[in-house]
Length: 251
View 1 (cartoon, rainbow, N blue to C red):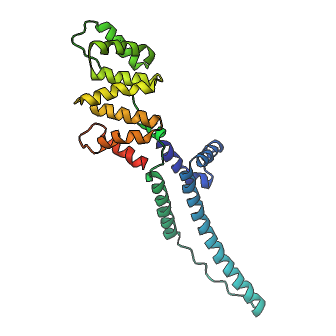
View 2: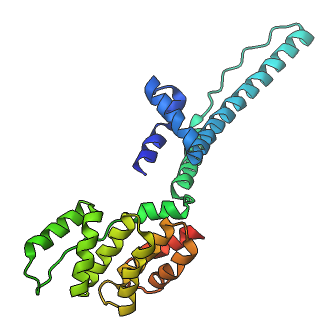
View 3: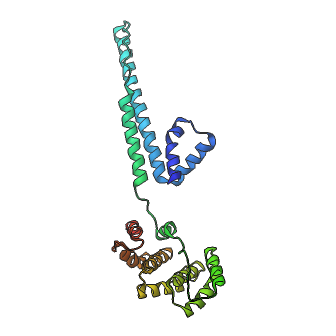
């Protein structure tokens, strides 16, 4: 959004020729890649063009009248005092129109496909282990570090071993993330389903959230919908607002 705002500030400078050659080239490239920005620019161009055309028409009418009087009357025409055009109302109307175009561009939701929605919402689950009945703290610290460094292929077998000894929802979520990131998408849903089935009071909503995101990444929005709807219709659920937003984008 910040990049778009920067380009919006350059619209008038671009039209007035105040940008450097490099900036103007970058701006033109942006309008070719962003249809809404191109429309905003075109709206401003048309507005300025209309103002210019209106001025020329008035001038042409005056010149035609002047020539006609010279040809038909054969006498000089008294020079009338030039009436200054009040540009303030026109400028105000132009600014209001431009503002309307830009606000429409800024606030109109951009169409997104399922994988784009996934990319804009996905963040790996943050693993924080505190297994009191485990004496191997050093290896647990190494596991957490490898997970945070996205060394998922190293993490998966360790997580699977730990889960044989202790059913822990954090470990299940970390295993789901690790499998999905490592390319084992089909088995990534199993740990999430276990958390949801157990109705874990702390992480069941997170499991639904990641289930929905995984299906969006696989371009299976229909399978993501039940998880999103559960979160969106439960006001105190984790990711409630995010789920509602995604549902509006999928319509």
